[in-house]
Length: 276
Image 1 (cartoon, rainbow, N blue to C red):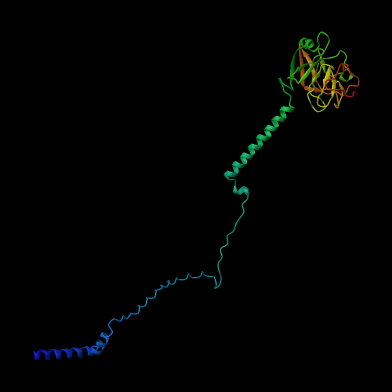
Image 2 (cartoon, rainbow, N blue to C red):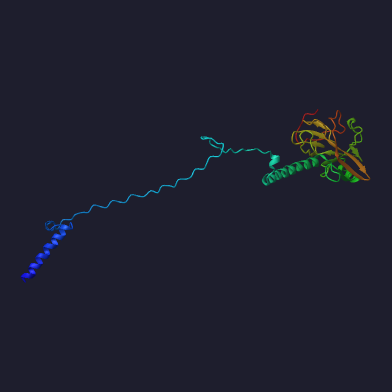
């Protein structure tokens, strides 16, 4: 047993010597460390690695063109050339816009022209502006003069005229004018002052305008009021036994110096008006 203890001692010492030669901690250091059991020693953090920045690869510069010196910069200039409408042509939108405008104006002008022609161009057959057959002469004579001699005009709507009996002797102002035929005359219904329709007044036996008081006798001769002349009348003729009113021919006559028919023959329908 003593031999074993001696061998252990020798081996232990040799191991300590080997530790010292290898640079390991000595026995004193180990004993000092054992006395500090319970203390925590913090290990400093390892430094973070620095980021690696990749440098861009150098780009090879293009060689300058021959003849261009250092410090000269080439500038590209864009040139704008204006083109006339004839050279550029017309787009589809412009074409349709112009076509619509042209159609509108053509229709408007055409309608106005047709309306003007309808007003000024005499009608060839029927209606106002043409020859109107007012009826048989004998029938009209019987309607316009009753058995007691009283006068009642016959209104012809198509001719816009009153058919009245013509006196046997007309005033000189009607000489040579086709104002009477078959003992009848045709008076335009319109007042020559401002165009109002002039109705018949049976009591005074004449035409009296309710608008401004102009008055005329039974054959349209001026009596009083603002009217500048007699009632206008149409040219008339008798064809066979038919009384024809030529509404395309309107005859104007001045105020009569001496009336062919007496007026008024009774009370006025619109009140008294100063006589000429």
